[in-house]
Image (cartoon, rainbow over the protein chains, first blue to last red):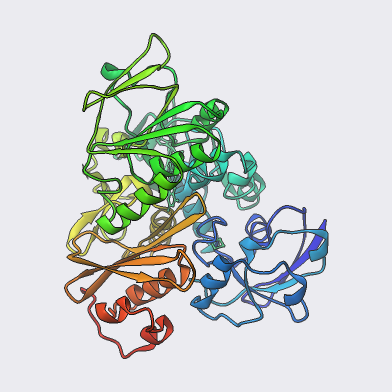
Length: 107
Length: 411
Ligand SMILES: Cc1cc2nc3c(=O)[nH]c(=O)nc-3n(C[C@H](O)[C@H](O)[C@H](O)COP(=O)(O)OP(=O)(O)OC[C@H]3O[C@@H](n4cnc5c(N)ncnc54)[C@H](O)[C@@H]3O)c2cc1C
Ligand code: FES
């Protein structure tokens, strides 16, 4: 298990233990964390699962593939170095302790 | 309070129920679905799930516990047989359930090849539900000969999966070109070349005359006289909106269940959303078959049940995965008079921009999410770039998005 903490747009913290192999998006969706819309269900096609990863985490995550990188070029509210698509982050033990912040707006 | 009953427990139903609860709706909410699985996403059925790369429970839109915790009743494996708009009841055989609001989210049903031409032979499939894939997947063995009938997105996705699994694939499309109904010639050409490079035999302008075999399909005869030996058929020849219940109850239907801008049918307190519903959009009745539409129309209906009085005014988008290509579409291209091709930043990425006069209508982006996202934002803002700027790859998309607005949106 890996503990992932989501900070929702209202500032509430959701600490959730996730099974390795799930995605950070699925963890939010299955536990009803507000603000992660995930319209395309994880197909890397919509960008409505955008999150900001907490300081110190960006370099510890698996690198972005070109699709994810290009999607994030024009998504609203993107902050280079902090923004990821949570459907592309697969949970592993290495992600234990990860904190992600859910943006105010998804599109 | 009898609350809300939703007929159908699919993509739209699930979004509607979640939105009602998120909006503070407190009366009972019941989803009644014919299928046995809790609400699930269909797109992977012709992609990762058919390929065998995705476990079944990952299709589910939410875990079953979500519905229980949110006070949403799921009645699965339960076909609704009749609705009574006057008495405000839905019937499941003998049982009758009362409602305050009823939402029809019954989706669409795939068209089948007629039995008269062998459409009822074993080995002939359509792709709509988990059950279809469970029956088909074990037959998708290397070396098997597959005939795909229909060159729309589902047929093309199935062809791509089949090639990955090592089947021999022939695809017939009776129109002059694949994707004719939904895309411009440029996009058809692009996908034809993609599939040919992966070894799919594509026959356009050729229909299926009949399938042959005793009980199981063994052969096909095409309209040009060609005979093929085949083991399997996948028909991707479109869907019909599931409007039978509404029609039988006297609710107005055309190409689907007719709703107004808020999602109301012709019967008071009865709404419709998703693949089954045709809504007014820019002067015509439009019916969409997409996840975007199922979710956003359902959420709009949920808000209106709670009194929002909101009109559904979508910015349609869609995607499709074939081999290692992701196609993303923003907008609707129907009615375009020219298409501009824009090479993307990366090798192999390209986008097609549909215009009607000066007005941007849609963008098809192949492995080019930047073009998709830029086009989507421009369409949402009702602005159009100059075709010459789009055609020029040295013009930066980010700059074009910031350029002074040239409003061309229809109001
Ligand atoms: C193979 C496939 C691939 C797709 N790929 C994409 C894609 O890549 N991108 C995209 O945007 N869209 C895609 N779509 C389309 C998308 O899945 C649909 O638009 C969406 O599921 C529509 O949601 P819905 O709730 O209206 O209908 P559905 O999800 O079909 O749900 C309707 C439900 O109602 C039930 N029902 C019908 N009548 C009754 C009754 N009388 N009683 C009880 N229950 C009933 C049905 O059994 C069904 O479960 C795809 C669809 C398919 C089939
Ligand atoms: S869920 Fe759509 S991009 Fe992540």
